[in-house]
Image (tube, rainbow, N blue to C red; front, side, top):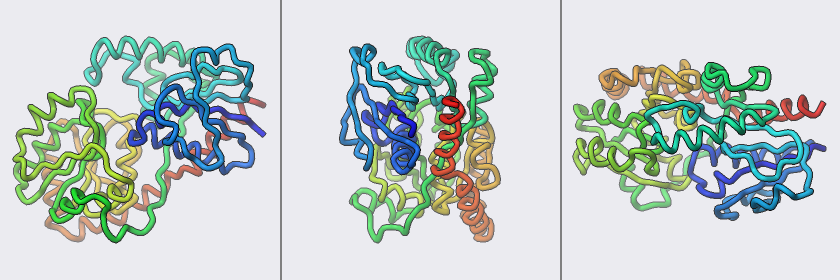
Length: 350
């Protein structure tokens, strides 16, 4: 049996983030595997978020670097290596933009986080990239040995039947409108300017944003979102899984025109529920969505406007997207994701 300690601090800190979703599904798959003895490590946050059947959670601090607890594998799932470092180190890289100067983070944050991540990547015995786009970007920076890098796509859970009614009164009110849905952090990288510009002329559509503020969030709210009238704009920082499922199912479309994504879980979540998806024709979203969505240039909001007009006016066009989206999403499962991780663990310990 392989003993694996997963650093899941990202899940302990915020159960709504994309990395938190990866952490939870990885723990669930590991707990089901007869080959794995699983431990969840976290440095801070709420241990209640780590309540996964069959998984022991342990809080760690700097003294743990002297701890004699041994694991075959330590898997850093959230861009941070835990202090417990006995065994082979696997490092999941969800995105590469902290490794070079960019406009998606503050300069100070990028320098600080980038320097730490570069050191951790050098230390790792194996690096797991969520997408081929992230893998190729990492290799283009010439920071690591390509032989240590692997592409392991994230998954999406097969959706169950929709709930009869939403849990939240606010979401119940939203479901009465015809709306476009955006799911993700409200930050520069997500290109909300594109969304607002695409929707301004489509007065019948409301915009529902589900996401917490990120880098530049205050400026985006003040300068970009304010261009849309208050009666058409609805911003919710967090919703339950049940209510998010209903929003995906009811939306006229999900519009996700990010400048850059390490993977793009909302693209898969929307497609899996038969929600027509419009997303960027670059970065990982093109790789993930492929023929299951409409791909647009993130610098051309008019392309999204035209796509939405077709979805609203051509039932056959919309029905085709509703068929193609779930078919594409079924190629990405958490079971396949974990089987690939297990292959990396076996290779490291061979």
